Image 1 (cartoon, rainbow, N blue to C red):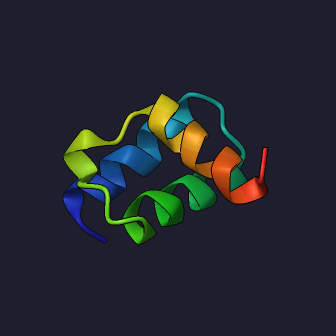
Image 2: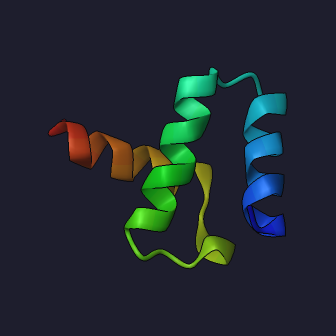
Length: 54
């Protein structure tokens, strides 16, 4: 796991996200070709909602 991915995972965990949500956010950001340095919570929320069709 890269340092950036590890930090993002820790930040999400510290923010109180469930393990499943954390894993989904990590996987979603990287699988959509978004540069990790540009990921924000809002962007990840938007990506997840788009994938869910909402």
